[in-house]
Amino acid sequence: MSDTVAKERRVRVRFAPSPTGPLHIGGVRTALYNYLFARQHDGDFIFRIEDTDTNRFVPGAEDYIIEAFRWLGITFDEGVSFGGKYGPYRQSERREIYRRHVDALLDAGKAYIAFDTPDELEKRRAEIPNFQYDATTRLSMRNSLTMPADEVRALIGGGIQYVVRFLIEPGREVVVDDLIRGRVVINSSILDDKVLFKSADELPTYHLANIVDDHLMEVTHVIRGEEWLPSAPLHVLLYEAFGWQDTMPRFAHLPLLLKPEGNGKLSKRDGDRLGFPVFPLEWHDPKTGEVSSGYREKDYLPDAVLNFLALLGWNPGDDTEIMSLDRMVSLFNLEKCSKAGARFNYQKLSWFNHEYILRKDDSEVAELFRPVLERNGVTETPERIEKAVSLVKSRVNFIHELWDNSYYLFRAPDGYDDKSLKKWWKEDAPKTTAELCGFLETQDDFNAETLEPKVMDWIASKEYPVGKVMNAFRVTLVGAAMGPQIFAITEFIGKEETLRRARRALEVLS
Image (tube, helix red, strand yellow):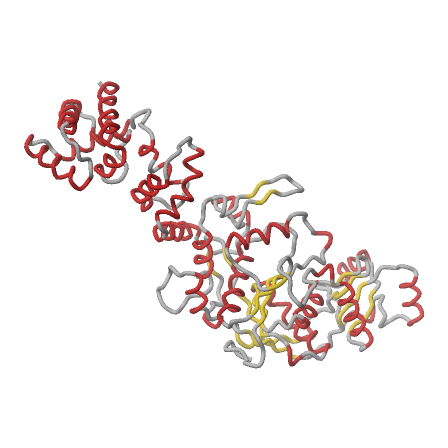
């Protein structure tokens, strides 16, 4: 089966996180690629929860993951909290299913029961360099291959804990046909007899649970991170052991997300060190109380985050950067994914956020800006907020930055920037500003397009330097030499407020 997908099978992909903490941004990218692939092929996107590792379970993590995808706008067709005919989709609720498949492997002689304790295994590791439980060591260990059947039954009946290991025959060439990395060949001799099931909690390990679930849920493609590539040969052998070769999914192992410097895998420590989030939402650790920042709370737009992530390891074949989710779906191709890791350039993500703010309607940005205004004690009409947004949104990367770039539109300055005063409030500034106020007093129309030429003519008639007059005037209105076109400001605040601010500045600065 190629990336074009065999027509006789409906495309079905899955994203299966573990509820062991917050969702890492690398996991978001994996989910996004699965989503793009499913939508491009009119297939199904499944949401599973891998909660068989009970020791690492973290309360609230599952709800956090679901809320993260809701914010991002990545939708699932079936799975935990979404329903579907292949459930249950939470692995802890599928114990009986896994037990049946473990027993099938044992009955077929493709797996065996091992009683080795952690201390015994540690002793062998100390005795044998690079020890692994495989064809060279298994017959010297405590397992059903070396013990009488009666003794095995007695130990199990006596409640002695055990694991079930997969029996891997050495010397085989295992072929993984990867959509990104091509043909990968691994000799089975380097694989160990992985644990598939633990009697301690009556639950399977990742390897067995995923194979069984992918088969029963008719998954056609497994798109996951590069870190899972070493387990792919084992999964191929498991499919063969069950006799499921004809329904084996195609694999695609995505490149790693690398540190911004490019030397190693992206981690939370990198975000803490450089001041950017690595989680989609803010995370409150229930065990330590530690709070980790999230992209939502840092004012990143979800569309910008998805666009940025899509291009970390894939490109559409040209220089296109800004793409809607629908556009990404139409262009996405796994075979154009890179094998090399992708550096996480968080500064580029700020640029994406800026571009998405620019492309949003002023009314949309105004709605996002309203809570910021309210936190600063400002209540305004939607029309006024939209007008303010239109004047300053080109200057910001984040919604919260709109306030620092527009506060003077909503309230008079309560002070004046020293650097701006030093540069523009020269000895003649009070005189020219007072005269300009006198001229503005005579004007009834404060529309920017009509007022600007009149003021420019007045300045010319006085033979004053335009820059000196207007920048000194800007400082009286804004409190600093900043902001959009000066006549856009005077139109927004109006004649009365313009003159009030200018005259107050003359009093204070004199």
